[in-house]
Image (cartoon, rainbow, N blue to C red; front, side):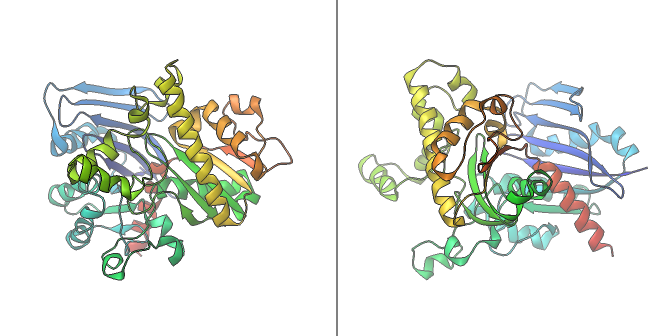
Length: 393
C-alpha cells in the first residue's frame, strides 16, 4: 500500500487539488480536479491522470472554502483508503524574505505567513485558508507550504532592490518574483531535454492568464519580470503589467480614484481584457477579427520580446528560450511572433515544429527554443515528500 500526498492550491473562489502516490520513487499522479464558484454556485469535477472523469457535482449555493475542504476529504475517502495520506502540500504565493524553501506548517509559521498578507493581499489569504482549516480539522496531519517566491531568492541584491529609501525597503518592499514553482520545475527537467541550456543562459516564459518570465543560469534564478507584486512585468489576462508610477498619481489626482479602485483596475480590468475590451482569454482574442483584439495580442507579444531583451542582458546572452504555461504551451502563433522578434538573439523558428507544439521549435544550429509543459503540482508533491522524509529522520 503506497502513501498519498495531497496538493492544494486555493484561490479566491476555487480550490484545486491533485492526489499523488509516493513510495520510494517520485510522486505519481492519481487524480486531480477542482471546486469552482465557491462564493456563488459551486461546481466540482475530478479526473484521473489519464483524463477520465471520475466525479462531478454542482450546488445551487456557495459552498465556501471550508465546505469545499470538507467535501473534498469525503470525496477522497475511498482513494485515501488505498493510499493513506501522509501529508498535504500547499501552494503559497508569498514567502517573504525569510521563507527561501518549503516549510512544515504549524501555528507559529502560519502566523509568520499571515504577516505577509499586505505584500500579496489578493492571493495570500486564500492560500493560507486551507492550512488554517486543516490545523484545526486534522492537527496531526503534516502540512508543507511551498512558495512561489522561494526559487528567486538566489537573485543578487541588485536584482532585488528598488530605488527607495531604506525606511521603506526595510519593511519588505523589494523585488520578489513569482511563478517560482513553475520555473523550478522547468529547471529540474531541462537537463534531460537540453543539457547545454540547463548549464547555460536560459529564459523561461510562463505565459497564461498570469504571465511572467525568468532568466535562469545553471538552474538558478538570475532575474524575473515580476517584482514586488504579481502585477509587475508582462501584460496579462486582466493585469496591466508594468506601469509608470506617475499614472497611479494621475489616477488619484485627476480621476479621484482611491487605492481599492486602482487595485481593481490594474488587477482585474486591464491587460488583454482592458486593451481589447472583449476578453481576457487569448483563445477568444485569436479567433476574433476585431482590430482591438489584434492590437491586444500584438502588445502582449511586444512586451514579451522587450522583456526578453532585458533578461538576456541580465544573463550576458541567450542560449535557450522555453515557453510554458497555458498560452506558452498551446498558442503557436504567439510563440512565432515572439521568436521572430528575437532573431537578433540568435533564435530561428522551425514553423513545422512550432505548429505541432515542439518540443523543440527552433532550427538546428541556432539558439534553442522549446515548449515544455510545466507541472507546479508535481513540484509541490516532490517538496512535500522530501521535507516530510527529512523531518522524520
